[in-house]
Length: 234
Ligand code: C5P
Image (tube, rainbow, N blue to C red; front, top):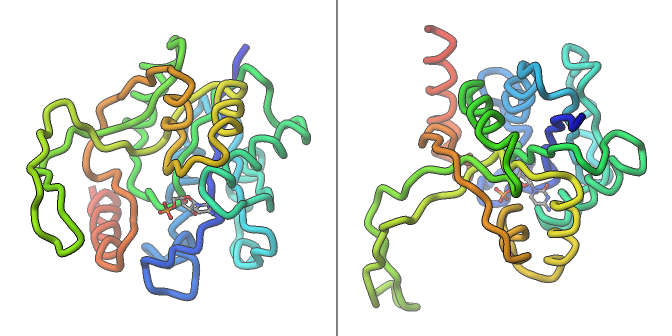
């Protein structure tokens, strides 16, 4: 039987946030940001393990008490210089430690998407568990898209028809994802699906919503805090 394993690449520096502390550790509702993603993944009864891929030498992780997640949560210090490298290193290390099997589903989720809901996660798993390829949460593009030149002048307005924004989790079987990331090692990819697409495959999109955004800029942190507080008050 295939298992469902979550993998959180958390080895980024988050330089666009303008903080010394990597963004996964910035305080969000009195917890480090990564806590919220772990908590949502941990609550899903199909997910049996959560692998967190830390930067080598990351000591910040160990300053927090993760004992409430023990049993499922495993931290591996195998992060790389890019997100794709962190995911691939994590997958390889997990297999060496017998934490995953070839046929398991891997759900890669950014540490910086703290507003993922249990319902979105369940929809993703339900819709893809029988899929040949796998896929990801995504939302249709809402804004009008402009292509610009070096001086910020519009060259062209792009059609947004059939254009979606990729989110995470992105869910693929272990062997396929490992092979895809291995093959894409020198390509400049920013998500897991791109690596799978480069094999000529067509991952499926599962409708999510804009709340599952990636905290990237300082103002995103305040927005994530409001969303989580609102949910806690319901
Ligand atoms: O920097 P960005 O927002 O694209 O990062 C997305 C996710 O990838 C974050 O969870 C970040 O910690 C992770 N990452 C990583 N290793 C890197 C760069 C980013 O695990 N070298």
